[in-house]
Image (cartoon, rainbow, N blue to C red; front, top):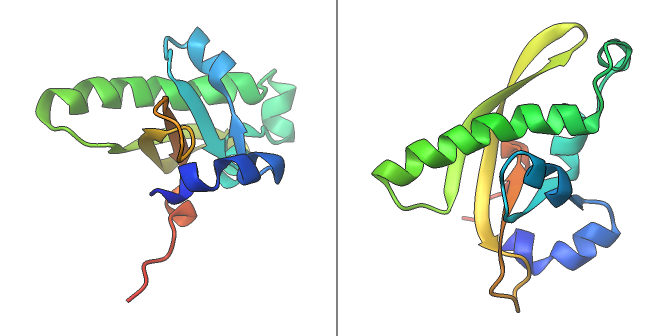
Length: 130
């Protein structure tokens, strides 16, 4: 999971990660939040039907952040972990679609002590080497 903080600066420049902290603050999260490009594409970018209903990236992000906040509250009562798996749903092609999302708590960069959360899809995880 270090990959996300070790490569964050390059990933931001290459648009492999995006900072969404301003919208996250509106949802009550005061920590910096980043999303991977695949999560942004699959979950945040509205399709034509969703756009016609008035959805945009910010409203869809809030649909992801709401179950994250609930999962953080539930998890911190029972265990100490930097990884939280949760389910969030958004509409795709006019139908609700559930996604597994992973929240990874770590530093903003390898040289920073400032904490942040990176939201990613399971396919964003680095492949394990034998």
